[in-house]
Structures are given as structure tokens and as C-alpha cells.
Length: 301
Image (cartoon, rainbow, N blue to C red):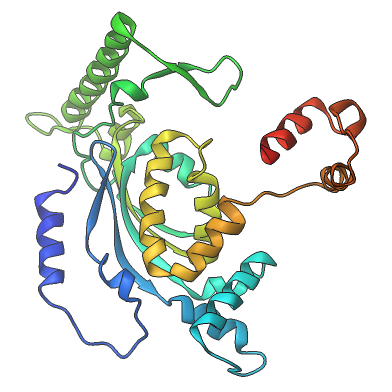
């Protein structure tokens, strides 16, 4: 189960004791509070707290010249303008705090986004659970032959069975030794901060992760992309569902301009202009390298 009995009891207690507030709330986000959404085999994400909504973005954008017009249509139009022209500060007025349970190797990739506040479960003070990420067979892929960071076809048959056996057996063996090293039964026992070094990177950790909306959308643009590693992409996909309910105007603009849009170089724009004039543009006369040309073609098709 992704949730421990302690987590479930905490969530039930929080849901059973709602409190009145004078602060602005997002109706969509209120439905997500304290709910844990499973990710991978033992992981989850859940919203612990949040601040702001679509109107907070507009409020920040209008502060320099007064409230002006405030219709719903104008709010969405303003947010689309801000997104289209890369005005990031108003989006920083919204924040979210997530409780995330994830494999250590995913956490090390996630922490590369250095624009959040993070507090991680400490294996110096506490003992990690015997929980490891073991890929489903369809996600047990070979190394890509064309991309050093990517995956190829899924492993099959005896090879897949062998790899899964290694992953399970090695993880269990490491944890057995971890437990033995920290045991104080008849011996002193190794310090937890040292014993943890022998644990595999697929063991689960947890953290609280607080980030503003601007930096969250940057995270999602990279990690919810089809080229991102599957194991972090599924977390990003789950967060996207929450954000879409929290700030629907901002998320629709994000989908349109960031996830569904494209950035073209000045050389590529000139090629588009030439094409619109009826010229035949090829890689050889485009001024682009072969790699740039392939990406340009992929953008237009």
C-alpha cells in the first residue's frame, strides 16, 4: 500500500476537522487537500497546503495600475497574456506544498530543480522502510541505441525475468544487511547515518516539497514531457491533474503556450517565412545543422 496506517490516520483526522478561513480559496484545490494519489508501486503525492488561485495571479499583475476591469473573461485573457509574454512574477504569488513518496533515484533527479523548499525524511534519525521500486515488465526497457539518456524496446522472456530477479534479490539482500548492521541485539550496532550508505537507489524516501507556481510550471514543462524519464514523468502527470483544478486559467494557458507550443530560432522563423512565400526550403539551404533541421521538421509536422 502506498499509504502507511499512520499517514491514513493523519489524513482522516485532518478531513474530520475542517476549519473556517477568511483567506481566498480555490474550490478545485479544496477537493484535493489531504488526498494521497498513488504513483508507481509504493509512491504517492498529496497536497498538504496551498496559497492563491487564478485571481491572485491577476491581482499581482494589476497592482501597478489599480484593479481596472475584473470580469472572468478579462482574468483569463490577462493570464494568457502573462504566459504568452513570459511575465513570471505574478505566477510566483501562488504556492503549493506537496508530500511526496518516491524512489531515491527519482528524488535525485527531482532535486535538480533548485527553486523549491525541501525537507526530506532523515535516515540519520529514522529507519527506512523495506519498500523498493520494482518496474512493471512493460517498463523494463533496454538502453536506447540512439539516445544515451533514453530507453529502447522492453526486455522480454528470460532476460526480463533475470533482471527483475536481480532487482528484487539485491534490494532485499541490501536491506537485510542494513537491518543487521543497525541491530543492537548483543552488539553495539552501526550508526544509522552510516548503515544507510549500503541501501540501493530504488528504496523509497519521502519529503515535503514547497514551490511557487512559476517554478512548478517550469518543473512540469520538463518532467511531464514525453521525453522525460517514465519514473519521474508519472509524478509530474499526477501533479498536472491537481494544478489543472487549482488554477484552471493558468493551467490552460500553460498547456497552450508551454506544453503545446514551440520556440523557434531566428533561423527557423526565417525558414517559415520563406515557406509561406512559396520557396522550397531544405536542410541544405536552411542554414541549420542536420539535428536542428530534424527538430524543426518535427515541430511543424
